Amino acid sequence: MSQAIETVDEDGVIERVSGPVVTAADLDARMNDVVYVGDEGLMGEVIEIEGNLTTIQVYEETSGVGPGEPVENTGEPLSVDLGPGMLNAIYDGVQRPLDELEEKMGSAFLDRGVDAPGIDFEREWEFEPTVEEGDAVSPGDVVGEVPETASITHKVMVPPDYDGGEISSIEAGEFTVEEPVAELDSGEEITMHQEWPVRRARPAEEKETPTIPLVSGQRILDGLFPIAKGGTAAIPGPFGSGKTVTQHQLAKWADADIVVYVGCGERGNEMTEVIEDFPELEDPKTGKPLMSRTCLIANTSNMPVAARESCIYTGITIAEYFRDMGYDVALMADSTSRWAEAMREISSRLEEMPGEEGYPAYLAASLSEFYERAGLFQNINGTQGSVSVIGAVSPPGGDFSEPVTQNTLRIVKTFWALDADLAERRHFPSINWNESYSLYRQQLDPWFRDNVAEDWPERRQWAVDVLDEEDELQEIVQLVGKDALPEDQQLTLEVARYLREAWLQQNAFHDVDTYCEPKKTYRMLGAIKTFNDEAFEALEAGVPVEEIADVDAVPRLNRMGTAEEWNEFIDELESDLQEQIRSLY
Ligand code: ADP
Image 1 (cartoon, helix red, strand yellow):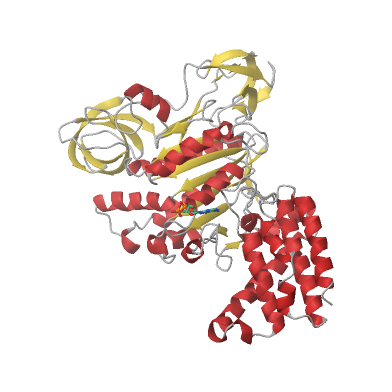
Image 2 (image 1 turned 90 degrees about the vertical axis):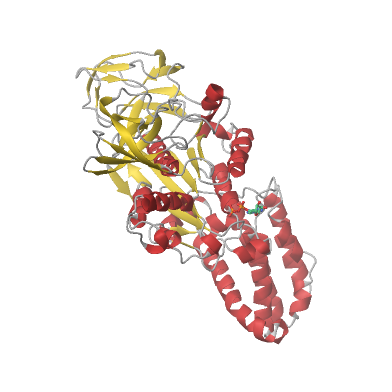
C-alpha cells in the first residue's frame, strides 16, 4: 500500500469501536479515503459518512483502541504501489511485504500500525529504454524494460492518468523506483513506480472475446471444462473436497505468464504451505523458480476480516498492471466466501438491512465488480493482455444453493463443482463431471483443433456421451444390479469406469501425473476409445463382456497418467489392446 502519505485537514476523534468498524466524529473525509486510526495509526478506509460521523473499516486488529483517540485522514483512496519487485513477494492484505514486516517486528502477523511500502523504494533496478528522445508516447505506452526476475521482464509504462507527450530525456542505467527514468516535454516525469486506487479498474481500450485456453495440465479441466485466458471460473466445494489443491495446481501449472495468488481468510497453515512450497517449485515452461512469476497475497483467517476485501482488490489491481504490459495473468482467490463473510460482518456492524442469509444486499454487485475485471483486453498501449480469475467458494455444508455460490454462478462462465462424495471415495480431483460446465468450450475448440488434434471436440464429446450414459445406467444398476443389464450396456459401464479412473482421476501429488499436457490428455482419451471400439467389435462378434474386460492389457489404461514416456506407453498399449481383444474371436 502507499506509504505514509502526509495527512490533510483536521484530525477526527474516535466515538465508537465495534470490531473492525470504527466510528469517528469531526473527520473531514470522503468515501473510500484511507485514514489512520487511533494512537497507533491503524490503516482503515472510510465506508460511510453520515452527518458529522464517519464510519471506517479498519484493516488491522482494533482491540485496545478506544474512544477519544485521534483519526487522521490521508485524503487518498486505498491504493497499491506498482512497480518492479512485486514478483517473488509475499504480501499481507494491504500490500505490506510479510518478510519485511517480520524483520521490522520479529513477527509476520501480530503487530499493527506498521507501514511498509509494497515495493522496495531503495533497491536499484537496471532500466533499458525502448523509446528514444523525441518519440511521442501516450498513456500506457512502454518506455523501457527492467529484468525483474529470472522469467519476467517488467515493462515501465506511462501511467494511464498522464497526458503523455514527447520524450525529452531518457537514459539507460540503474535507478530506484522513485527516480525519474524519462521526462516528457509536458513536464511529466516517468518513474518505475505507479500508484493505483484498488477499487478502480485500470483502463483498457477494449474487452475482447477470449479464444485461447488457460491450459492447466489438469485433464478434467483442459479436457472437459476449459477456462479461457481472460475467463472466469468458480470452484465451489465443501471442506476437504479439494479447493485448495485445485487452486495450487492451477497456480503451479497454468500456462499464465504471471500468477497472483490471493489467500483470503483461509487457515494459516494452508497459506504456510503455499509460502513454503512455492519457492521450491520450478516453472515447467522455463525451469526457473515458480515464484519468479508469482505474487502471493496472504490474508489468513487470524488476520483482521476487513483486510479480506482489500486483499482481493489489491490482487486484482496487481493483475491488471501486469496485463497492461501484455502478459497473461491468472489470479486465484481462495476463498471468496471468506470475503463475503467479511462483508456480512461489516454490514451487520453497520446495522444495514440484511439480505439473504444475512449477507448485504450488495453482495452480488461486489462479486460481479470483482469478476468483471477479468478478461482478455486490448490494452491502451495496443498490446493484448489477459486476467483470468479463478475463485474458490466454500459453501457451508457444501450446499450450493447458498447466496455466495448462487451469485457467483450467475457471473462466472466456468464452474468446477467439487463433490464431497467423490472426495470421500478418493476420486481426485473430485470435480463432478455431471454438474460442472464451461461456457468457453466452443470458442476454444478452434485452438484445440489447431494446437492439439483436429478431432479434439469430437473425442471430448464421445467422452461426455459415455459419462452421461453411465450416469443414466447407474440409476438402473442401483435398482436391479449390473448383471441385469444387456451386455452392451455393461460394456459401456466398463468403458466409463476407465474414463473416470484412468482419465478423469489425476494425482496432484505424483511427480508425473501432477501435470498432463493437452496432447497427453488427448492421447489417453484415445487409448480408452481404442479399448471401447475394439471391445464393441468383439462383443458384436459374440465375445462375452467378462472376457473382454479380462484382457491383460486393459488395466494398463490406469497407468497412462503416471507414465513418463507416455507416447511410447500409449502406442504399445493401443497395439496390445487391439491384438489381445482381436485374438478373442
Ligand atoms: P479444501 O480446500 O476444499 O478444504 P483441500 O484442497 O485441502 O480441500 O483437499 C483436501 C485433501 O484432498 C488434500 O489434502 C488431498 O489429500 C486430497 N486431494 C484433493 N485434491 C487432490 C488431487 N488432485 N490429487 C490428490 N489428492 C487430492
